Length: 144
Image (tube, rainbow, N blue to C red; front, side):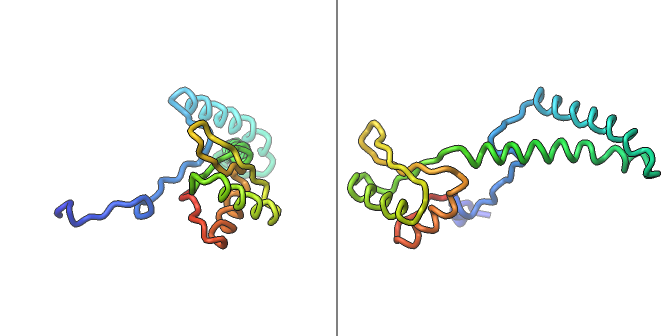
């Protein structure tokens, strides 16, 4: 296949999903997570002995609870983090858009970056609503 025939774009690539959004585990982190899962399995298996289930089924809920809890806490932390986007260098236009988003009840703020570029700042948990409101206004929303 000739590479000149292929078009690459950010939207055409398959996004690799990560189960953690804020944490980047290295070998030590994955080892610690594995160790905690093993401890949870070792504690869960005797606790569920009276169920009569095989050992594998008695041990499985422990690691599932550990990984699920880790993902929930990570997503909660990610939702509270702030992101920013900018679509123009005109502070007056950015102020007007920020005011319209604020009138819609969306918690956004306007921040002036050092080179004089204004940016909208909002929490990740509000990103879908902000992007939808920007699209309704005809403003190009940032690519997630």
